[in-house]
Structure formats: structure tokens, C-alpha cells
Length: 91
Image (cartoon, rainbow, N blue to C red; front, side, top):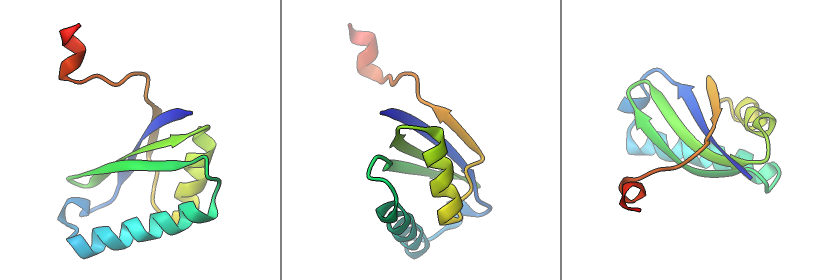
């Protein structure tokens, strides 16, 4: 399964409070529950006017379908080609 980074442009995202973020997560989870079990939300980063989401899915089309059904934009969808962290340089 491919991992994707989804960039969502949402004005004021960084100013969303805990309740708004929880409601958004609940809504996303509800849509995911109605879709294929092949699409998985891993986590998201909220920064400025954007939310960056990491998803596992077999295709970009499934990511787009979730965006359409949930009402959350998917302004850019990029397959992740590698993951590195500080331990990558220790080998």
C-alpha cells in the first residue's frame, strides 16, 4: 500500500480549537468507516492555513474520493517515496 501526503488548504486551520479539530476528526472517521478498509488515516499536522495529512491507500483516487465525500479539500496529493529520520544517518 502506498503512503500519501495530502495538503489541505483550510483558512484558519491553525487557529482551530480542540473542539473543532475533534469534530473534523470525527467527521473524517465517519466517512472512512463508510469507505473501503484499504484507506487509512495515519495522522495530520495542523500548521498555518493548512492541514497536512498522512494516509495509506492503494490509489490516489481513493484519497480523492474521501476528500469529495468528507468535504475536506485535497489541494495536493503526493506519494511518499521514502521516510527518513535522525537514525537514517547512523548506518
